[in-house]
Length: 394
Ligand code: PLP
Image 1 (cartoon, rainbow, N blue to C red):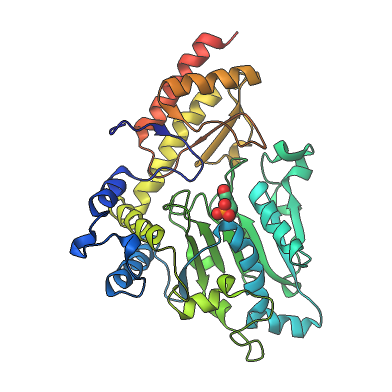
Image 2: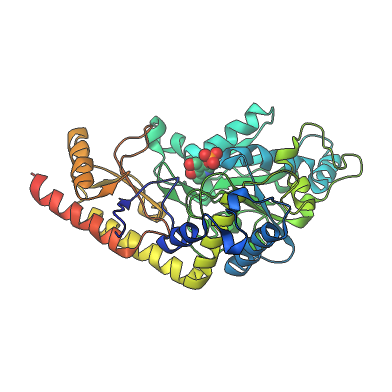
């Protein structure tokens, strides 16, 4: 890659499109004649107002976000939104009315497919909620963290009854375990009266999605959208409606997690992560220039190159995830021994390919192929796999 850069296969915070970084560099000291950096600019200035509203407008075009959805830029990361999803839904008028009708607390459904959906579940427990586990992928396979290798058939899911369920929550791409749900698997399985909340932190903006089928989508920016520090929420507006009796200040819902509070103030009820939002806006513009369908095609092409190599030598490149649920964003595999894995990572570094070590909880190799990774990066990685196989297989 140019500028002495590396092929960066990081799972996040991840690589950005080079043209975006170059634009940031050009405008770093003096943003469009303002005489200052975006970092130094009041978020209440006209210029910054245009940056944030421009970012939202571009994203709306790229993802075809319907007008009955709000787009919010928040802080607190994916983890903040684990709590926010639960707290905001239970503060919404719809859930409160349903609860009054039922005469007791509603439940909420969690699909556990890996570390991050488990994180969402644990956050609800931490807040005193009693989520229903629809399935736990680890329990299905049986041996702890490494056991998230797929998803049980829909017929085996223990979804709650629609009239007793506030929402269904899942993570579409498990960044650590490399498990990705095929498009619409969950929205097809859930009763349309129940809002579906989806964590798309690591596959957002990689393919077109039918936003209208979701209650809310949450995503940390730092994988496929921009720098760390900003978290995107796309939420159906009726879920922002509140009873008069819980009004603006909902008991137990901190303002920084309150979707309503952000919605009413155009994502700026307090100082937003100005620079991160600005860079996201540039990435959205880049995505619009490429076209979301082109991004989807490229994501499939990159992943296919690597998976084909894994499938050619499955006894050597040991893929961990069932084919139907293999992620196109984070591809995980093991080599026959930990020594070979260490050697593979060392040889990769010699060839300018970095951040390939599997998550510390899992080991092995993880190669993340987000939007900004050119096809040549995936080709270089496959060339490394081929050479390594030749030299080291028995
Ligand atoms: N959800 C997914 C899918 C993630 O990959 C991550 C982080 O890697 C998170 C949530 C947590 O996000 P954050 O670190 O922004 O809190």
